[in-house]
Structures are given as C-alpha cells and as structure tokens.
Length: 135
Image 1 (cartoon, rainbow, N blue to C red):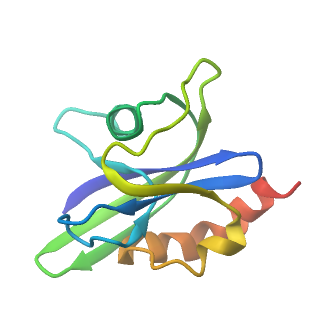
Image 2: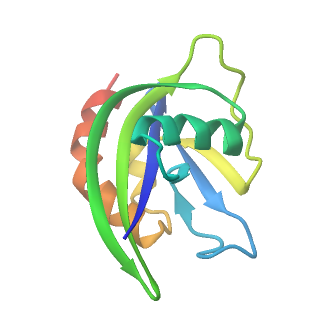
C-alpha cells in the first residue's frame, strides 16, 4: 500500500484545495496538496517536501488529523492528512503541478469533484476543520 500525505492548509477561515492537471491520474478532480512518502522519510518530512515542490511555499504542521485507505483501480493508498498553516516567512503558494488552486470555505469543498481518497477523508475530517475555520 502506497503511503501518501496531504496538507489541509488553513488561512483566513479557508482551506487550500488544488485541481489535478490534465494528463495526470484523476485529471480535473480536486485534492488536498501533498504526495507520496519516500523511503526513509517521515510523514511530516514528506509533507513539507511535497508542499515545497508543488506550491513553492513552506508550512508549519499543526496536527495529524486522520488517515483513510482507498483503492483505485490498480493502486491502493493510505492517505494521511495534517492540518497546517503557512510559515510566517513563506511566499504565497503557486500551483506549479496543478491546473488550479483555490482557497475555499468548508461548505464549498463538499460540492467539488474530489478525488476518491480525498472525498472519503473530507467526510471524516470536515466537522473538525469546520470548527477550526469558524470565525
């Protein structure tokens, strides 16, 4: 099973969500940014590396939220989510590997075409994220 980490990146009561690029597996679907954990890498180390590579920003990890196993055709993953915020000295995120990215309110995320694992994960963590994002 492939270990994957993702950031539930929160700012100003909104969550950053990214759209997978055309030509990639699950193209056009939305996901929380992150990626595969490399051999010998910690979950948090992998997440910080992936966010730097995909978004050219730096994060602080607040909490290990939850994980979910999901089976795509030919691929099984364990997706682990962490709540995060931008580091105080971080540049603004830029979608380097995604078609698009948006800061969205929690209630907007439910209506998106989320990738399967991200949808399952969102259903588990939405109440907690909604409480964190409440003004």
